[in-house]
Length: 244
Image 1 (spheres, rainbow, N blue to C red):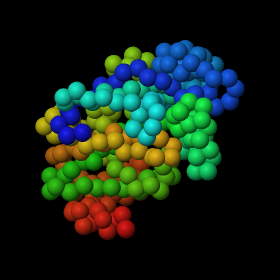
Image 2 (cartoon, rainbow, N blue to C red):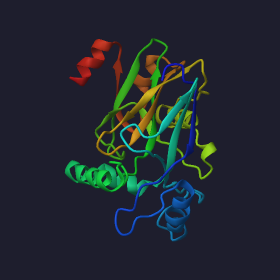
Image 3 (cartoon, rainbow, N blue to C red):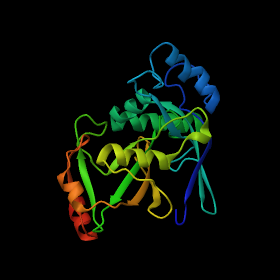
Image 4 (tube, one colour):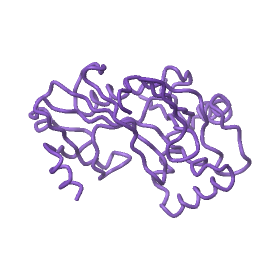
């Protein structure tokens, strides 16, 4: 990921049908056959109604842990498809044993261990203070990952026009919503450092480090909607101590 400053996406595939006959999972076909009918029936929301939540999610497609991707100079291109929040929740709440069984089924049927998984894509943001420190917090019970230590993070925003999916804008939004930092992310203050994922369920976060203009005090004094508290990490030794 060294020197990558742009992230693009191309059309890929949605998850395969868990029950019944196999379906066409190509991006537009999956939208028309699976996602849009559920929106019309009220099973899913597309976020267009006031106060509603967009249940459509971005999926990293492609066989294997790393999915399909390519790089050209400073641009990373990921292959993505449509999926839904209920499918993502199903993966998160499924037992590890059942997940492994589903991986085996995907390998046998499609040579892809994640063929039946939502593989939801999110963004993770590590904000750096003016003192050079970072803060991590424990997710509250209202989160999909309650009790988990996490930086700023959230699901990526889906668009049926694949060129409009923008992970940098998602990172910027999460900074504003979770830690009340309003700033424009650019090549000067933001660095993309990689993709972190769950090797069993396959969901991933694109991770960005952002140099903010906020001091430590901002993170120590705030009340956070998605974290019970934020803990300062000042050095590699402190990060290792926390992990241990």
